[in-house]
Image (cartoon, rainbow, N blue to C red; front, side, top):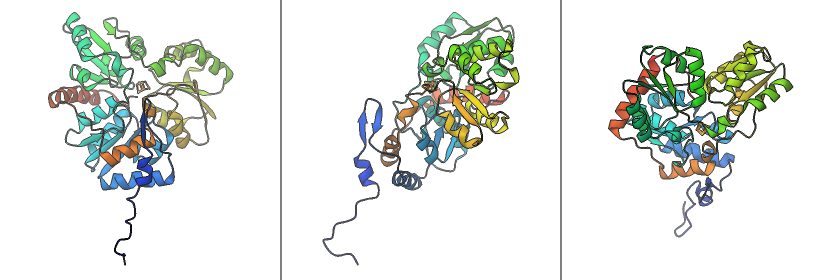
Length: 351
Ligand code: SF4
């Protein structure tokens, strides 16, 4: 029986919460201990929330999440989840896409400062201006774009269906493809289309995985398979190596992050070189533990993805922040372009 005047036990997780500090690279101060994981799960249950984590998240965030995947798969899970609250561990445009597809749900991101250099490479104002220069052109945007840019887009695409989306457009109409120049170059090459204009945006992480590194790695590991994300600066180089017979074409796979997981399960080589953000290695190693997965560039880490720290996730669940809002009119327009993407070809998972 409780004694009058006895001190109340502190609320669960109090000691953990007191350690959270905010700094220039985000929220820090909390380690991913079993106590932290238990507190995250308890708060998620209390809030009727489901936790989604992108493939590029820190391993400890992936391990505590209810679902791990690529951006599109996660948005679909968000739309179908019975929970009222979605905690999206990824970057801001991804959480926006989940909100666009599930406007009635509360969508939270553990740190709203987690942006994306690729999505930021074109603003809605710049796209309006570009459209004015090419009246009548069809606008195709990769999913790594803000809700405002999606609202000005005719069809969104992922890396898996970008070629199908562009091939489905009347050959006499101009196409504006944005924002990624490497994916755009891949689409132009595959479709042979001349009337396609490509925005010269890039992701600083993927652009940093270059052809020289790929060539060196390919030569050092002649029996390995090669998984390349089409946003990589080296995607062209990978196709070139295959074309020159330096790397057998059947061992080069240009894949979205979701496609990489399927390909890992089907891979026949004992070693796979992976050209994308290094967070991807965690899920690949879990999917195919018998394969030695190596990064083409082990410095390819996205600082924005890594802003979703154990401290940020704890704060998010504790304080119900940061909530993601998309203006309803913009969301309606953006939803239309995202739905057209889902209707064409195999949309795969985007990044
Ligand atoms: S890896 Fe590149 S494209 Fe992906 S979220 Fe980071 S900055 Fe954006």
